[in-house]
View (cartoon, each protein chain N blue to C red):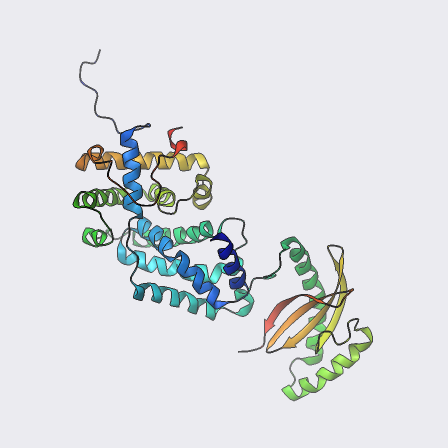
Length: 173
Length: 199
C-alpha cells in the first residue's frame, strides 16, 4: 500500500470549483472594454474601402434579393451557356469599334433582332439571346449594356416581366 | 436581431455599402474580442482584427447562410487570429500585462487579480485549446460550430475544452486558489457549466 498522500488533483468533474473556474474564464475572457471610437472607425473604414475597391461582379452576390437559391443555381447555369453564345456574337459585331460606331450599330443590332424579339421593347436597348427553360419555367434571355455594365436579363416568357439580371462585366468606372 | 441581420446581409450582397457598415459595427466588439483573446498581444490583435473585418467585407457576397452570420464571421476572425499567431510565433510574446489589465473592466481588485491570472493562464495554453475556449466562452458558440471552425470532430472540441479548463484550473489554483473566491459576481457570457463537458 502506498502510504504517501495523493497529490492534489485538478478539478475534472462537476463541482463548485469547476463551476467557479468556468465562471472565472467566462468573466475574464469576455470582460473587455470596447475599442475606442477612433480605432473602431478606422478598422471599419478600411474594411469598407476594401469593399469599395472590389469589382462590382465580386461585390454583388449572384441572385441577391431572390429567395430561391436552387432556382438561381439552375438559372445561372443556363444563363452562362446561353450568354456565352450571345456575347460572342455581340463582341464580333460590336467590340473594337469607336463609341460612335458602336452607338450606330446598337440600332442595327436591335433592329436585326426585332423579328426574334419575343418581348418587344420590354427591355430597352437589349439584345435577345435565347429562350430557355429553368426549373420548368420558360425565360427569355437578353443581353443589355447599360451604364457601363454588361448584363444578362431574364424575362418571364409568359409575362415578359423581368425575373432577374446578372452582371457579367463592367466596361468602366 | 437575426431578422435584421438577414436583411442587412441581403442588402450587403446587393452591393449596399451602408449595410456592410451596419453589419460590421453591430458585430465589431465580439469579433474584436475573439481575435484579441486568441492573439493575446494587443498590438498584433488590432492588426488581426483589421484583417478579419476586411475579409468579412470582401466575403459577404459569398456568405451562403448555411451557418449563422455570427458563426461565419467568427470563423473568419478565428482564421485571421490564428494567421497572426503563426506570424508572430517565432518572436517572443511581450509581457504586456499592463495592457491586458487596461482592457478589463473590473468590479473589485480581487476580480482584477483573478482576471489577470486567467488571461495569463490563457496565454500558456496551446493555440488550438485557446481557440476552442475563446469560441466557447467569448463567442458563445455551440460545440458543433466550434468543430466546424476548427475542422475537427465535436468530440475533439469537447476534449480540448475539458483539457483547457483543467490546465487553466491548475494554473489558477497554483497562483491564487480560485476556489475561495469563485462566488464573485460576473456579468454576461456563460455562467453555467456546460452539461456536455461532464460527459
